[in-house]
Amino acid sequence: MGETPQIQTSAMAADITIRRYQEDDKETVKEIFTMGMSEHIPSSFMHLLKQPLTQMILMVTFCALLASSKSVLLPVVGVTLLLAGAKQLVGYLFNSYIDTCLRKDLDHIQETYLENKDSCFWVAESDGRVVATVACLPAEREPGCMELKRLSVRHTHRGMGIAKALSRTVADFSRERGFPAVVLYTSVVQTDAQRLYENVGYTRVREFVIPEPIAKITNFTVIEYRL
Ligand SMILES: CC(C)(COP(=O)(O)OP(=O)(O)OC[C@H]1O[C@@H](n2cnc3c(N)ncnc32)[C@H](O)[C@@H]1OP(=O)(O)O)[C@@H](O)C(=O)NCCC(=O)NCCS
Image (cartoon, rainbow, N blue to C red; front, side, top):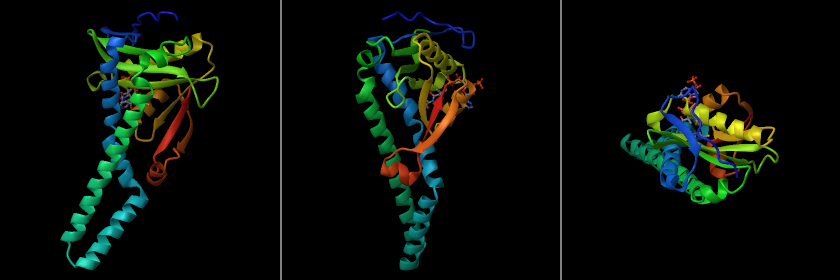
């Protein structure tokens, strides 16, 4: 297993370095991932509100309560409760996804990413503090390709070119290991990530709804990118 040297690219602020993950980084890495994912809860809720089915349910509920109570108060309370329930549901689904990712690989970064020559996990450090993460490993769904995963940058360090540099780190590693392509999956609500991937040369390959009933109902699509 080769040591990945520290990398400092001209596109990034001078005090930022990229290095391989060490076990001491575990809790910070999990926190950066959790915060990066949690911030998509409000935009996912907005996405849900934009769906025709959601709007129809809210409208039907409002009209039915208005017709049965002959007062505006009950429909307003009813729709408000429905909205609050929907927000809770979106939060619950995101938290479940985060828990799954933690259990699947982020609780075992060393075993999952660093014991095989074709996978790796990196962190970006600023003033000795971990501020961003990225990983890659051979893609399960696309045999022969590398998959970029777990890209997340602390809010305080966004817009400094760190994600761009981490994407480049994965691309260089994949090329060195002889992988002809890198794939990754992001969601319809992760618009900053979509802009980043398109900016660094990834092509949008397809967009699909994950086969979960709730994803189908809410039209929550996943986008596959390829470099
Ligand atoms: C997506 C994310 C990783 C970008 O990190 P970043 O370090 O701020 O990105 P960079 O500074 O390297 O920006 C690179 C490019 O991405 C695009 N970009 C990133 N953030 C953007 C924003 N808020 N608005 C518009 N474009 C943006 C731009 O094209 C930018 O290039 P430019 O500065 O030359 O225009 C970061 O927003 C993040 O961690 N989000 C939460 C977690 C997440 O969604 N991860 C993706 C998992 S698939």
